[in-house]
Amino acid sequence: MSAKPLRLITLPISHYCEKVRWALDRQGIAYREEAHAPIFHALYTLPLTGGKSRTVPILVDENVTPRRVLSDSTDCLRYLAEHYGASWLYAPPEAAALEDEMDRKLGPSTRRFAYFHLLPDPRTVEVLTEHTPSWEAALTRPLFPLIRLAMRRGMRIDAEGAARSQKTLRELLQSYSERLGDGRKYLCGDALSVADLSLATLATPVLFPTGYAKITIPPLAELPSALREEVELQRQTRAGQLVLRLYAEERAKTIH
Image (cartoon, rainbow, N blue to C red; front, side):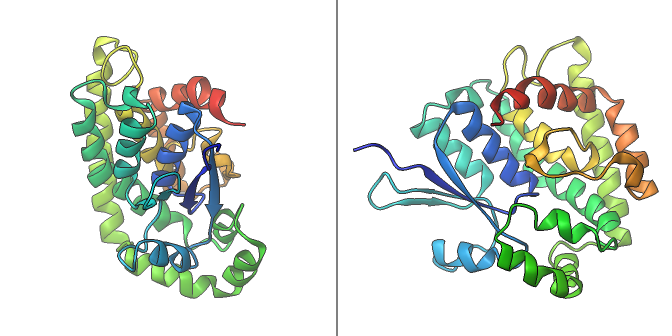
């Protein structure tokens, strides 16, 4: 009997979902993405996790008994490394520590900063609902003011938080740029690892690389000025240049 495709429950725009999606694609693992709009995604994540998690990504493997349900991007990638041959993710000894730092600090900071500037624009709802079921998209549009409020509260998105996040993301991207200062090709040397996937995906909200998550990203010129200025700044750093290169050279080969 042939193996069943894994199930990947996502918010398409989520950078943590893109992290898992990229690993699946690069490893050539068959999977079916089940994309949902904000708030509606909890209708699927809560039942799958026995009420324990509202968040995405959720990776479901129905090829084992009992089925495995993983509800954290790092847990998902660890599972792929241990059970689906993606050992390259954690081959460098320092890769896991870098992933942990980015998961805890970089991802939340870039997300909060970007959403602070993007959520006031009503056009953001179209980006948030791209690739989601039509009924979810149809309901999200009139409910967007309430959904936006829930997102702000849930992720503590306000002016003070955005300022703190901007400071944090700048410090982190500077440290990764310094790490690349010796001319290495990737964060951990000469081979791609989970550190690079984490940087490439979790820094996306302040870099807007072409090819991200198959989402129609607004042109740079149409972004709010403060966000556009941050993107332009970070694209000039060594870390930003690595992310752009990874999407152009590595990610582009895996997107179908």
